[in-house]
Image (cartoon, rainbow, N blue to C red; front, side):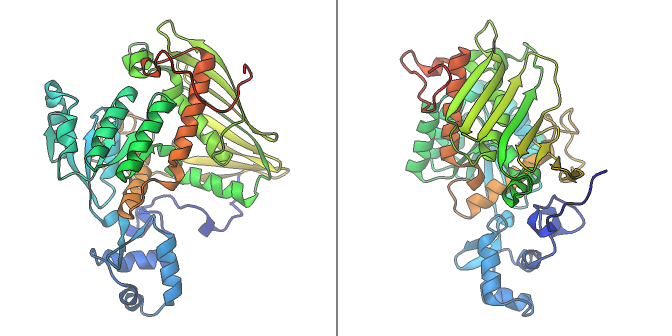
Length: 450
């Protein structure tokens, strides 16, 4: 039988609930929730003295300012007034109208300030599909191509979710027109293209981030809290496996020209969790083996990573075998933490302290509105689809606060992860047309073959 977490509840990220408005957005009863209640009544914001009056003198000025400044996930400062970040308007456009875009746009419906403005077709003859997407999901209009979306004055940020090799052109086009960009993972198919996209973001000064939704889940945030607390001692190893059988009928998965293969589609999840567990440092050694489909994409990968003399990870990913639970475990000197199925969108973790009974923490996802019913997985196309709301809120708040990236999805780390991916592909023997005939993978970390 599990036991209660020994950590104070205030230290644990809260799951969404639906009995109070502020609880829907992850706040426990605290000064934060009191500030939420006061600011919710004033969409244009309040000064600190005005907030103090609303609190009836319950907290001193320094404490109020401290909470407002530290909780940028919830609060934003604009023209000298504090407001609720997720209640401020942010107008979204969509470059890509496939299944993942369907799930993400539905999650946006739970972010109060999100406005879905424009869906773009990849090219003119695809306009009917964009129009159908817009009609189905309440988007204001559909336009005939990405150029029209980039020039749309009614759009602040664009969600890019077309096929991997097309991410670069779509993202750079949007950034050149001053649009913020949230680009689906992976940002690109190799390191050089990833660096080009990030350089453009730095040049234009817009928000630009990979849509690595796993990082935003409360369960993942809690694992980080537990590791930092020393609950399981010094962490020495992470193991994660993502095996999901995919039919050869799914063309984009088996076509190298479309960025196919298991690594970039699902292997990025255990790889990114390993990076996050070990402080986002580049591994010193990468060793990979696996299977390659006759068409030239990886279908199975087994990778060992050495981060230091005492820190290691082993990950497995595959699309050529029967699906199995997607789980991962962090191992330390005083115990372990298990991310239960599915670890890339987790709602349950268990902690196994050395010589003690394990205990379990569950994080129910936000309650699904009845209107969401477009896919086979509880109304979504992908299991755990309601979890997109965590990512949507995090990005929304970051943009409203004037940030250029999300702290938990840093650009430098995205480059490093792609360098590791390039090294894995080099060892597996796969390549993409975008790699070029003269490009040799540039990852600095050695492999067991070098």
